[in-house]
Length: 446
Image (cartoon, rainbow, N blue to C red; front, top):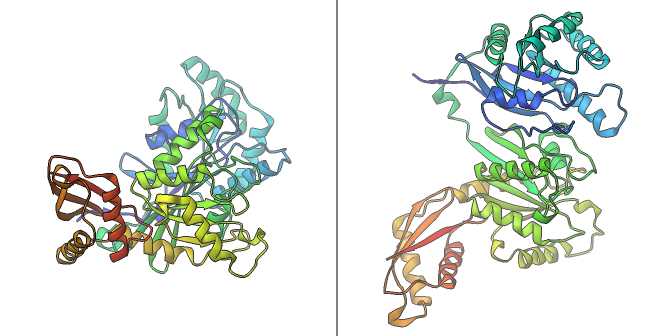
């Protein structure tokens, strides 16, 4: 019998250290893919980022944390400290990463003392030791920290990573194994929180979780990595992904932001439902529509969330009129449900998960063949395509897939079916069946 493990029950391993010592490079090397953003600019990682990893059959959850500047009073760096503290409190093992080329600093001594107070097993990882000679010198210098075991590695080159992982696995706690049947009893929905910078994405994730899991700041572009967080509610499991704000391509001017947007797009492709946050004072911008189309093209369900609704002067019927405005502006994305929230106040947040469940169900909806045939006949009786004998005449409609719902129209005739008739079929399908929030894919074959 195959077995599986709840990710929340796996051993937790945190990577900590000051900025630009190679924590994210080590994270990527261990998980085996380029998930965290890596660059030469200090402070690229701000939130905690997690991923499952495995070494010699041992599985664990790895957490990459923001660079720790111990004596900084800047607001966002204070929050980075809090994130590191939370990682320490919830971790079974800590990988303390230092820079073998820079040598020992006062920050490392303070961090080592602080982390030791938590009583969490700690491995010292001396990174950027690209040669054996650099490694020997660095190991001697960092021995004053009194942390054992210590490993000299090069995350970029992969040097010493195997030995370090062997040492890590040796101190991991044992985990309980459960049957697949038990694990499969918990449905899971992947939710991507998307939108332009500074529309409240991280605040909304925190409001859903009821805890400060993602750093919140009024500085646009605070979230650079895409952060996964598991939420369980009423017997269902949700994986929340807070993505980086996506600006117009012409305004993306740094390597870090380009990488952030690329990661956000990949996460949308893997999501079941996307929450597109918009800001009421700015309304629906061209960039909002562009981001929504990214979700549609990836086959992801879509919900438009008008956040910061508490900042609007309320008047009777305003939400109804604003909903009509949003649908008009969204154009061919008007099928997305619209809801209103205030992430900071908590208003409207409780209604999000039931709405997400409805969209996920619509995305997985399969129409019985008999009902689909009846609906198709009514479509043809109501309106036949233009083009006469030279155009394509639809003969049969069948559903070929779900997630998202996908259909094929079989047609006769020499010409191609016009795009407006395909939109007509889509609109009639939406009228007859509950596809709210789900994109539909309709192809024509002769």
